[in-house]
Length: 190
Image (tube, rainbow, N blue to C red; front, side, top):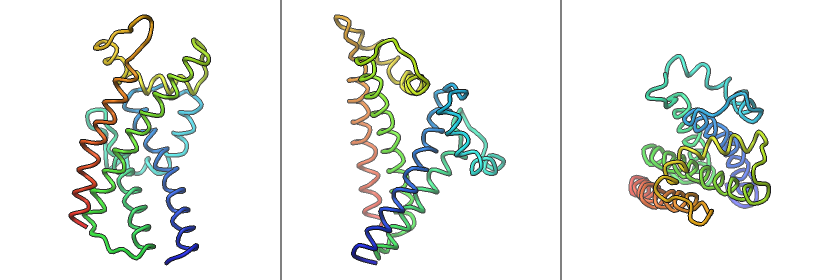
């Protein structure tokens, strides 16, 4: 399917799947960091994902604090999105290649979530330091497992907290060292 209709269909698939994958990713990460689930944003995320995750939880339990139902849902959604887009574009791609690419995209999304949440936290600390709203509470909960250890390694210098820079550089390195090779492997398989 080519032209404008193909572009519109691809856009629609990427948008609809992307939004839901993002919400499921937030749920996974917020569970991992043990964020406050009584927060209004967290409640929305739970309500949006619970109907799909509830049946999966009976089959896939949590292991080591990682919700396997959430991880499986993320991989399945990303796989279906990539498969639909490849089908729309008329590309024949091997299932294994799509699976590896789906994992790469999920890892990249997790990196982006952390990068943007750290950026939001930094900007909000400049604009309105010391204030609280429910979204900032979630952002702080999400970032603290990464920023806390970085603060112990690089203490504030002259009142300036450099830990966000260290963590953002580390996240970029993970993207280069993990996501890049996964995409390359998917390319050789597909």
